Length: 536
Image 1 (cartoon, rainbow, N blue to C red):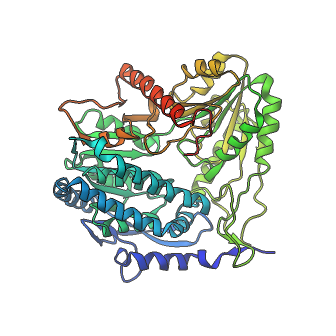
Image 2: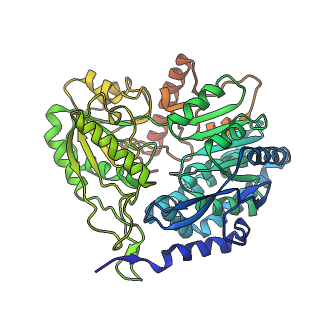
Image 3: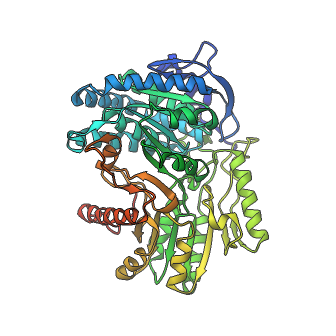
């Protein structure tokens, strides 16, 4: 039986629901607009966008030029002055009203995430739920966290496309809750419609948020260097983040720059393969298009037969396909592990890197198939099945860089020194994990890893609520966030204070890393999370 798009999930139907909720966000011709100083306007120079799911036309991204972005920043800064004087109880009331409305439309958000960025429906529901539940926790805790600290003023948010709700919108609402105005950039790769609805709802609740689209070259001067910007929050790749870090470190703006690293999972003196299988499976969610995905496996040589049997058994069971395709109109949406990547360009770039690694000596160990789960004749150019390479050469891009897709590399080692060296290949990462039967040995290995969070027999993630988050080396620059540190990062206390973070002072970075890792361990033990999968 051939598959078809579920009637309730078809793009015209989903778009009509969106426009009914935020009608002012579109002009008379149905083109999306920018949100500046409380008003939707300025269609900009339209850039055609299509869905990575199947090439469906989604409309146009309203790209602003530099001058328009400057006007938006200056208007947001003026709004920030008045918003900073609003009492905390009123800010909490408005943020709570926004959360109530966001939750009413969680199913629509999940559909928008599917069309915008290729996220499977269930994972889209999880994204909106993590956003709203996380911010509600801050609503309850913010008075204690903020104390007498003053808002900074205007926060600029530049984030990647993969988590517009649970990362970008979550941060925006906490920043507003702390008394700041916010301006955010719509990612050029995807997320326009999801963010249009979320920011439109926030604006209807009376929150000082602005949303602008445009190229990095056109908007970076305004969204980073404009004097009215008091803090920059960035999530993205090193190619964009490193120049920002170089400029910001010599200025006086607050900043939090999250960048990628090669997150590695080491396997040493280990035997619980059933547990590891569940983690391997979970790790492929959303095609590993996550900053905390694990694309590198470093395995003790004598364990390779057991590891490969476990690993390849998981890959054979992964479900890849169109996340909105059903057999019958009333069928539930399929629970695929992942759908498309963000674009066919990303697929092409990964295919080039795979071919390069193989041509230089990597062993092509596994490649999945795309032979089911699709609508007949649909565009599949943005889909890539799971691919695994054994022993990627040091001269290949996949050895040193995060693939940001369903491409794993496996490295075999014979000593602990090799294990640590191969896990530290990117000179700093956000997370790492060790599969090991001996807790003391695992802890000893963890001390030598250049990762902010290290899990023992479990995956690590950004976490939620009061769990800290940051990075080591090139994976992060600026203030750490999470828990009270997220509020502290966007507020001011004593003059000259230095917040916990990864700055250019190596000793400072290492000191805070040890302290924050110890705090994370204490939190895990207190909640009974120690040794459990990090699914929060």
